[in-house]
Length: 185
Image 1 (cartoon, rainbow, N blue to C red):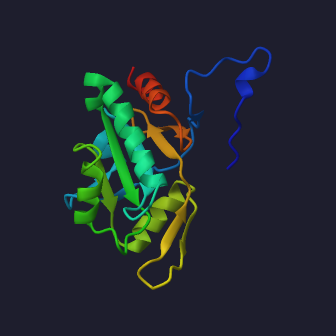
Image 2: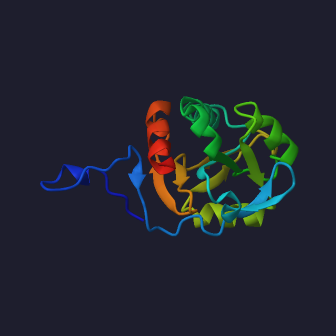
C-alpha cells in the first residue's frame, strides 16, 4: 500500500480536515476479532457508535508503545465528555508474554477505559497482517528477553466501523484529538 501525503497542496485540491492520512475506503482491520483483557471476544462491530483508535504494541516496549498510549490518553482527555465516545484498543504484537491480565494492568494504567487485546499467536499475527503491520521478533541475550519490532502508526475508525485514518507515531495529542473530534461529528 502506498500512502500519499501533501496532495492537498496541489492547485484546486481540497484541504483535508485531518492531520492523519485519510485512508477512507481501505479494508484494513475488517477482520479484527480478538480477546479483550476481560476475556471477552471482541470485533470492530462491537464498538459501532464509537470512534475506535487502534494501537499495536507490547507491554515490554521501552519507549514507542507507552508514548503512543500516553498520547492517545491525552487526546481522549482533551475531548472532555466526547472522549467517552472513543474506544482505544491496544493490540499486542507479543502474545507469548502479554497475557490478558498483563494487558489489563498495562493499558488501564493509561486510561481505565482502554482495552488490551490479544489471543493466540496465529490470530494476533493474522490481525497485524490485516492492518498491513510489520512485526518481527528480534532475539535478546536470553530466550525471554527478545524484543518485537513493529510498525508504529495508529488507526482511527469512524462510528460505522470504517477505517478512516492512519496516524503517524509521534503525532501530538492535540492533533490526534482534532482528528477524533472530526470523526465524532
